[in-house]
Amino acid sequence: MFAGLVVNFRISVAALCLLVVSVVTLPIAQAQPLTLTAQLASPPTAQPSTGAGAKSAPLFVLNSLDASISVIDPATWTETQRIPTGKEPHHLYLTPDEKSLIVANALGDSLTFVDPRTAQVQRVVHKILDPYQLRFSPDMKWFITVANRLNHVDIYRWDGTDLSLAKRISTGKTPSHLWVDSKSTVVYATMQDSNELVAIDLATQTIRWRTTTGELPADVYGTADDRYALIGLTGGEGVEVYDLTQSPAKRVNYIPTGKGAHAFRAFGDKKHLLVSNRVQNTISKIDLQAMKVVAEYPAPGGPDCMDLSADGKTIFVASRWARKVTMIDVATRKVIRQIPVGKSPHGVWTLDHAARY
Image (cartoon, rainbow, N blue to C red; front, side, top):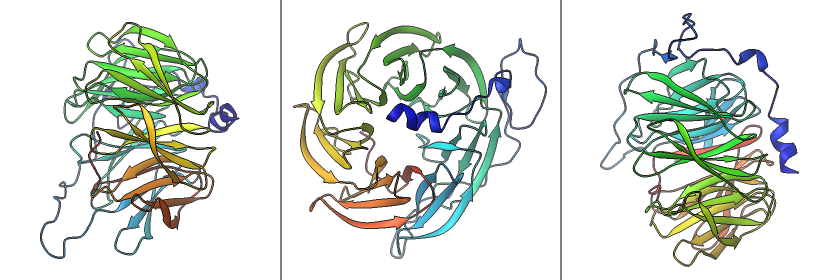
């Protein structure tokens, strides 16, 4: 069932495989490293407001089938703006320094950078080949994308302004989601259709190991101490736990959560983790010490990516099949609001969020 959903978002683009990376179309010899140079100056980064009357940062919802971002005003919980993106965007990512919200435009072969406070487009980076999911290393020296249709992981060097392709690594079938360890040394990638977890050394850009997972692995989350990786099984009914101190990693636990376990969001206390169960229409809260579910929340409409308010009281989740973003009260475990957005909402982020661990 879920393989079919993924296929709906894939279009064969064999002709794009020789593209190089730059913001503008500058010819670069194939033998040279691919280099991205920003041509559009980024506007000054807005600083968080303080004091009475300070305006909260907007909530951003990525609409994959509309190629847009819905901007939600937290004062009224209404959509106030639509930001166009590249073709078929699939994931949003807030940079570790929180200066940019990046959209991966998979079929547009581009990245859209947005100011997370003002909702202004900072720049568009073209010729990033098939970016489906994306992530910076915590030290922001490395930027990684997965090519969901083309079966490779791209590792870029980042100098604070420009990207240069360090290496393109052939992996398993249908690379899906990424996690980078806290030391910025290893990136872990799930292979959705070959059912694998692959560990890649960032310094050498080589595969350290690969191990077999359950059916249709999606999101991957590493614990704060880098000891365990949790993987949501979209083709199953729970979360696998892998011991990363072993090489290759060994599965040591399985946590039943619900059908279609898919995306993770840390609860901000280094003790708990949320996982969306896309078929079950629930969100499970996992105790990372006991490795078991300790709470469950209703999440109608095919819950996907999530964010958590800074005070930890409200879960925001993209309801993929309902064209809405759903707000859930943590204390009462009830849906308190659903906000109409675009087609197939696939990501939600806000600058006013709880900690990522």
